[in-house]
Length: 294
Length: 291
Image (tube, each protein chain N blue to C red):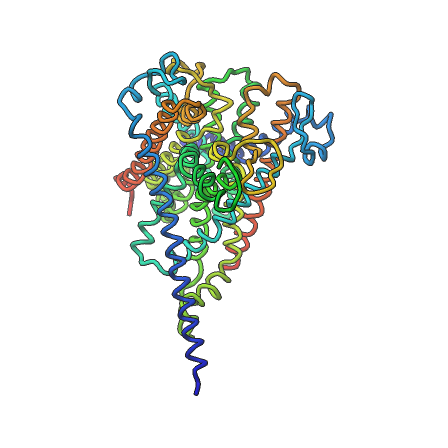
């Protein structure tokens, strides 16, 4: 009786275990099936690289949205990477133990705040700041709802991801290596740069890639501050219209225009595939790091 | 006459100090951003924050600045997240137990499953929203509490599984071996030893996922619908707090926008409470833990 129960449990749990893999497959296949309606009529290259977005005329060029996503994400990373890596260096190399311990809940909390809250904050503080202070300072006129505002909000949202992973990577670097460098007369910073950063380079790369994929798919916070104008942006102060925002904004009308839903599903599929790619990349790098440190 | 080495040493020392300050400033900036976010939202929400926000549903013309509260969204969000967390838990626990009891650490199944969980963790919630929408149509459901729960459960599932897995991996092998040597089947070991031993971690993981579920907007946009009433059943549409904030902020009326800030403050407080509860319970629920 107990053995039978054990076998049953084993089968049941084993079945559940196939779920993650199955789910990844299902999402990709499901989105693909739904976007086939548009892939069948338009060549993929035109869908991805045309900037003509006129759903009513049946033109679905995703380029403005793809470039909007890339602009916002790259801006966010340029802002977030130096700050979060330096912050991680401070926490792991310089800070006393109690600060390091106290910083962890703060970082967790920053990671746990809902994206809508970031969005509200962006509208409250970042948008007026960009529109009222930064843009005039650079001699540009901007409403503040811009790529830059989206980038700043996203940067803060990616801090916790990058800091967390970087800290873990730094923790795997043996303390003896640092001691050796210090005992040879290197200053603390020289040790950090030549030993810690060099040893942890791949791990930092992986952290950045993870942060990148986080930022890439972020929807609500960006949607609220980025302006949502379907044109290829030319500068940081232009509004943009990233892919997730496109999907979120048009769910209401997508059933009434032919092939609109398929275009949006294609947008989701593009997002999913890019995220999948970057996740695989980050994993591959991290596995190599782990293998080396063992 | 040898000023050179000294000058160089001084330069090295200056660089060292400069970077030390820079690193400290960066860490402070990260900390400060959290303070600014919380401060700005709480400060801006004060004028509109009132008890009727919490206890009343929106009356006619609420989004034009008339009377009412956001009770519908608070209840909707909590119901949705509780349901989703329950579904996600029912999937996560067996999965994690299977990986830790029946499969070895480095077995192919375990490595691949963890990899797929990480991928799922990285999938943007808007993609879950779109996928949930497809599934919803395929099942013939309308936008409803149930459809929202299923979608959010998908989102929570990898988060919860990975969090529980991380703690269960730490259960010492000796405990499992002791249980086996007493004649327990592996299933009994799983339920009576592993679950109890990692109870605090399980709780933390569940609350982590719950917090995500409460706060996520993009995934429920397509699937949960929106309504001014408190949902009465699983098939009714349900309002959610993040979406209520989003819609309120989208109106041109200052009173309504102020309410959006107040709603954001309420949401932030809920998240804070969940996160603090997670920490406190994680420390407390150690009654059955063998040290």
